[in-house]
Length: 483
Figure 1 (tube, helix red, strand yellow):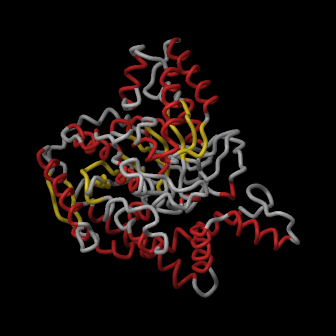
Figure 2 (tube, helix red, strand yellow):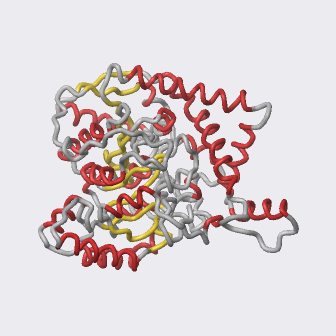
């Protein structure tokens, strides 16, 4: 059962080959047995899962249907789940039980999805390796000595190890696409505003976006269908009709114009990854796509701009965690200032503290114009580059990451090296564009991803291209040894 995709599970449940309760119990047992190797879960919700599975079986027995009805999933541990610990991978929120469900959680539950638990993540989604979690590093199932990517590494490792078919994730600078690339999954970051952020604990509000991690584009289409839609509780949610993402998966790629930015193939890209990307391009050409070289001239400025904007927003968002209303509180504070200092100093880890300090500095008097304002101007230039490119092409293709997954601890003393791994992904967040990573091969036994970017609200186009590619390749079917 654990080898089935979401689409296969939906067909199996519809054909009464097994019940949701049977499937849920199999996967819960598998998580209990195998997850100690991976550390991909922070909390298991066994009682809730069995209860939801039984309810889904009753709904099916009463004639209801739906691709997510009875399907087991997990949520990244920054989506609020009522009555269940929502920790954000941080000591600061280790004791926090959300009093309500995030919109994404509520929508998927209404569709009949079964929540198996909450997955591990970089603390407050800050990281590219899933090493900054208060609950310990997550291991990559393809090689337990390597990182699974971050910040959604727990969701990625769990799905890649066949502990469950799909999971929710979030992407602020590549935190869905990069773990997908590192673990041989398909991961989709929707257009900013396509998926509600209400109840999704914020890192950088103008960049964060929720999306799915799964093994196939078909499964991502099913997940996104359940997650997307306007939410009046979220002021950044966009009131745009949600298409049937599964309906367009079979569309022909004949004549599709694919742009390949020349800036992607610089000296920083592992030549073995470059070769795999070229192989992917050839596969898409066989399917009728037309390849065109394009330019994104301001891409080189994206990382410095992102690492001013994101920490600035983080320093503001995380100011609410002060030891007063909720979260970690220090022992026996001498006064209010001591309470603030020690609660935040004890509750936040080194990477979070680093980004709060950078952000507060960039927003401070005398430096706002020099750093934050300039970074926002660069953000507009990056967006303009994409808008010009999409006048010439339908989608943009390139590597998801410049290198395969590195060893755990390799970048521990060099955060800049880790930041540079986001070079290909952060531009989509700065511009608010949808992006997808799909499996494209292996380097030294470690997975590699190819990234697709599209104009606003063209998630269906990305899913269509990825699905057609996956019908003609088998990279996405490979399973890590031992899982």
